[in-house]
Image (cartoon, rainbow, N blue to C red; front, side, top):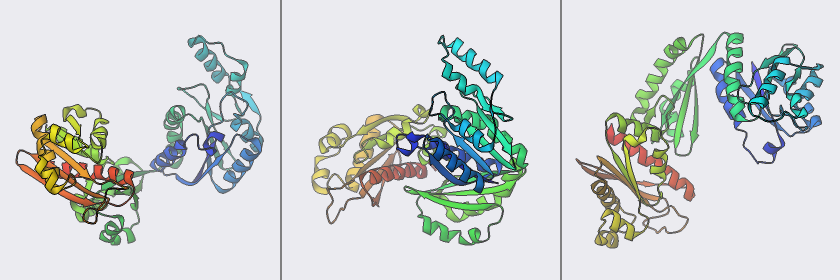
Length: 409
């Protein structure tokens, strides 16, 4: 079953907002055995919308639209599609009653243009909107399916989960179950070589690698009749991949690296402090985004200057003068000083040259030292990164989380 997602909205074309709806729908549909083949975006223009919809209907079995269901004149998705399908618009009484109730509870008068939202293509299945005023709808016609969803993600996502996912589950009778193997410390090419025979011989399940900044993910997907059957199909392949990639695999549950590191700290009842120079608090900030992380995250130091390193962390002036701020010696003293000052079980530090200036022949831009300290001693890791300032800082934080993970394991 081929799907095209047609996003409607001039604001998308102008770059005022990102098309996160298409991303969400594309990620969810494989759960129910449906593949997305095309994404398209069109502005709030009836002629261009009509042409885009006509093309989508020709090349896909299912067209899912987002946006253009509201009360204003430029909200033309339902009317344009109904016209193209040869359907009249008809008032849906339950939707109209829901609109009246919504405005009554809000103590606001309902303007006449809002009534437009309760008109839907005749014969369509109404998709109730429990988070807004514009209902969606589903039309089955001539072997095709057209699904119209609202544009705001806060309305689209719940409607998609409540109505669209169950529709396809019932229609297809099978689903796709996936495991996401998250990998850090092995590049995409090297990783692929290690499992090339598994990829070459894949049938069901299938394997899809994709890389993002600093790490690699393998999506292993089984087509099946039930979630239990899917997990059984996935198990041998996932286990073999994990065996080959070893400790580079940090999750098979699609967790982020910082989430894994925090979970391990919490499970082992250990506290941590961060001492950051080149990352400027990024590592601690991402940790702090995790609910419940107060169980392990004690504090973070941003010690960018040499004076801060000495005053806050006790790094010696001699170390800085002899070895420099970007050195293994400084990183170790930062970690040890942070652990002592904070009184935590573990402390981790980072110091480096993020660029674009500041590099030397011995220490080029991208040179980073990370150290970790606990009651049993301290150790450091030197990494050499490439890219712009933002990438170097972001990838450095991934290495920090990986060092924490490995230390605890």
